[in-house]
Image (cartoon, rainbow, N blue to C red):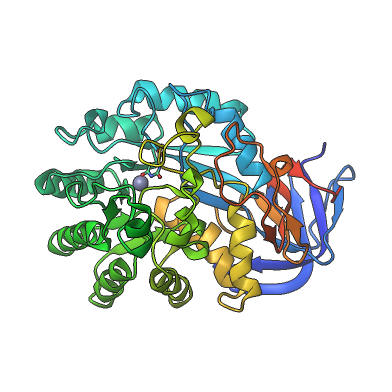
Length: 425
Ligand code: DOR
Ligand code: ZN
């Protein structure tokens, strides 16, 4: 297939250039070119009437499970799931076995990712083995290709270590992504509220998240350095982040589609596909997250794609692993926010492409001339029922099977090469 294309009659949405208009997009040799540029004779043509043409979506929070738990997911299967969901780039968390805390593991991921359907950006660990004791070697991680550091899956319990991590990471231009959870307050299996009481399950209060969100804001404020808060789930955290941003603190934050779609009620039948960390919260929290996506308190939508097999999920709620897959359902669920009038299409693309690229410092998220042709074509108004046939991941742990969703990605292009398409070519 060619890697020069003319994509015609689409609605081109490019938040970096403030552009939202009907038009054609030219791609020459894998890069975005000016409209009207001399296009090679073998260029392909894609008719995109009725579709959005956007910069490729970037997921800044994916768990790929390789090395170590390839029966749940591997780098190639995760990347296929990403392409099917409209993502052209994914940043993978280091909580693999072994943990990605050194160049050997990062090099392995980068090497495997050469065969992957989308760009894979490794995130290195903050501490060795993510044990929270000694910092990992950030210089070595950066040199091997890590784009950020995080101990995601666990909080950095020691506040002094977290402060040093912010300082050390800033020397290498590495963003620090924080999993905010007070582990002593966080000893439960779902949101602490009426549903947990009814089910007889141990609860996790919203304070378990807020305490750490505020700790990280305090550290960012004191040091003048940046911190990114992963998977925000509560109104209380949002109030802290909003106030910190007003004071000029360099804090950015993401949420995941399940937090603006579901509530604690999803766990009412002991469905382990409604178990994740942080947990699904109250109706008021869900409402606050929707508002924060619209008003700029939240900067990004990330999937927290967390594949687990039936071995970890077909069991008692208390014992089940935390997390759900998200790469294939994230965009369709997020399109609901546009359908409901909460977000404009432009704002949605900012949350799913431009801002994640900016936070991670990636050369992506824009359709400006000369940019790599990482492009997603979206049919926002083509309702479908989410089913197993839509899943490319090795795992099936999602509460969204059977759900009617408003639209989806129909083509995913990386560097001018079509890596996924559904009924468009
Ligand atoms: O639900 C979750 N799953 N939360 C995390 O923080 C980790 C993740 C995983 O790795 O499964
Ligand atoms: Zn996490």
